[in-house]
Length: 97
Image (cartoon, rainbow, N blue to C red):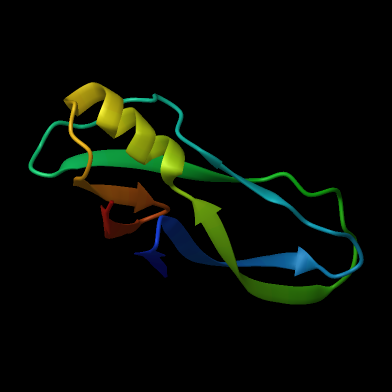
């Protein structure tokens, strides 16, 4: 699942482990907009956690900051507010800012 609220992309993730602290990074590889109405961005989620040999299956919701995409949109299109479609891992959601 992926949805937006107040400039945050909320994403459910699951991973194996349980003994180490896992971290994730939101990546915008090409730093570009796909032109449409509204524009679209394709994002990736990188799991940057350490090797974790524990057997638990962890599920959590991540809150990821979308302000870099909104700032880039404002700079590119010269308007204060707008919207875009955000794609991440097979999901899409509309982001208004």
